[in-house]
Length: 327
Ligand code: UDP
Ligand code: MG
Image 1 (cartoon, rainbow, N blue to C red):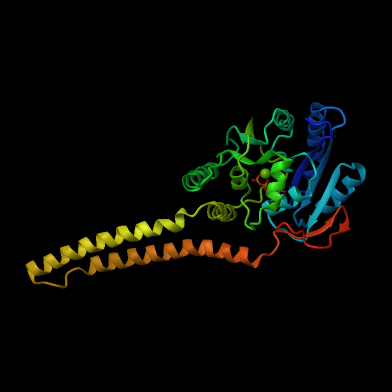
Image 2 (image 1 turned 90 degrees about the vertical axis):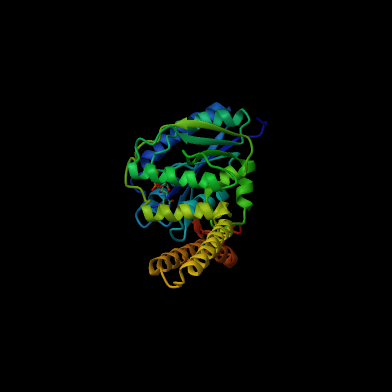
């Protein structure tokens, strides 16, 4: 490591987590101090909380915590923008040489940070936290996760590890790159793998949520999955060319057969069922392909509008002026 003073940043998005903050600070604080000792004397840290438009006492608790611990930074967004946007805000604000996004609910065990930092010092630019199992998840969640990662990795240019969340260590080099990416619909996991670089991984067991409950309902997860897929693929758009060609090929064969049959039997109008079936089938295919196009077009519209990904209301109690220009 260079001789400059090393700064480590934790980036913690929080949304209505009043009960989770104190336990998080106790455990993560101890862990990051351990990590700092590991890096060497003079190493410092900051904990950047991004309040993602909480409506409970979260903001007040964070402000109070900041008066006791100067390592704490509080970025408040103007409303709830979602975890990925909150993370983006945190990455922009963090100043550390290594930045570690982590959940506040202690599902990502902070003790792993020390190991991540060790790998970082050994030269890894990204250290991925990989869950060893999904025992704490429901069967439904496991199945849907399995389905999503299967489809994603089949179609995306850069696959993602099926058990990695957002918990990882990012070197400043990668953080700077992520901060300059122009896209608005951000699927962080996809971006992390897209950037490449020397990556290492640390395995951990993802624990149950300590307090409160998850904000991910299935509808939200579904939309999250769509964002991920449309963000990194074009195959679902292009596949229709081939489906269309195949269907048209079959239609020609079928047409030839029908002509032959008519010539042979003289009866030109059999087959209400076959007409209904082909019509509904083709209608369905048409709507499906349109819908898929719509998913992409909608996202293009969002990109073209060019609205910022998030709006900062205040930073450490100071009112933010301009919308930050990364985004
Ligand atoms: N979170 C957020 N904005 C949201 C939803 C969640 O900042 O709109 C934060 C939340 O406070 C937590 C982290 O993202 O720190 C993970 O959320 P959660 O535990 O609900 O997700 P899960 O662990 O079930 O994937
Ligand atoms: Mg959680």
